[in-house]
Length: 139
Ligand SMILES: [Zn+2]
Ligand SMILES: [Zn+2]
Image (cartoon, rainbow, N blue to C red; front, side):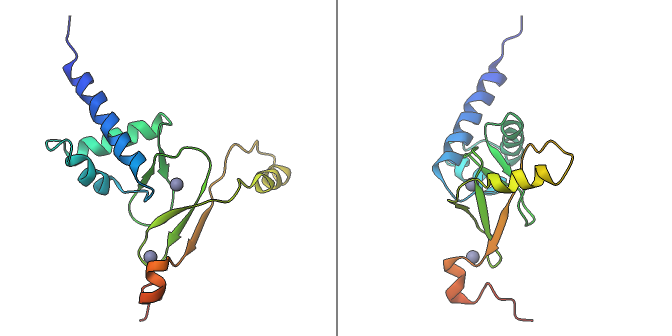
């Protein structure tokens, strides 16, 4: 009979990754989370963090954000909610607006699909970038 020390360790790692992700509202990338998790698990690798994030997203424990930008971001809030992405610095915040059922109903009424979900991404210039002019690209 095989012992399962690796499974146990993986579970602990996953718990710590989830705890760290739950602490922040910044929708961190895998490498940002890696920096946070590494303070508690100094020997963990970026690949392990990344694999666990992908697994947790597949299981619906966390959200993998489908927002613009080059890096995937993760979110411990799994309820339907909306995001705004800063076009200056790329940061992603939650927008506390009610879920747009009208939008889903309109999509269902105007297609032959059974509509099961939707993604809305707002873009804007965050308070930090508004003053600095980073939101405006000057060529
Ligand atoms: Zn910004
Ligand atoms: Zn969010």
